[in-house]
Structures are given as structure tokens and as C-alpha cells.
Image 1 (cartoon, rainbow, N blue to C red):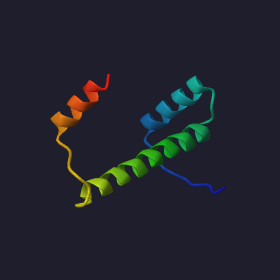
Image 2: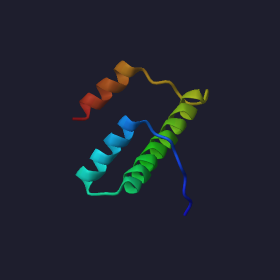
Image 3: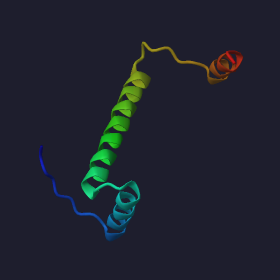
Length: 73
């Protein structure tokens, strides 16, 4: 496991401490989990962007897709 150092504004550290206290976790655990969530979202966004850039991927009409989804229920 590696260790990193980061400088954070005092307000962010205060929010981090509040979250850690509320979650009964250490600062490190909260930071680690926040980074994991961020990177998961980042990967999902990258996949979505790549799909949108793919000219072979069909473009859907939002009104048609919405109607089809509403008809499923």
C-alpha cells in the first residue's frame, strides 16, 4: 500500500472530520472511499463518453426511448 500527501483547505478538512466522526471512520478511510467512488464514476463517465463518440453507435430519439420505457410499466 502506498501513502500520499495532499494539501487541503481548512474548510475541506473540517468537513472531512465531520464526515469521519458521523461515519465512525478515520480520515484515511473516508478519503480512501471517496477516491474509490470518484474513480468508479470517472470510469463510468469515460465509458459513456467513448460510446457517445462512437460513430457506429446508433443515436436514440429521446422521446421515442422515453415512451418505450413508460410503456414497459
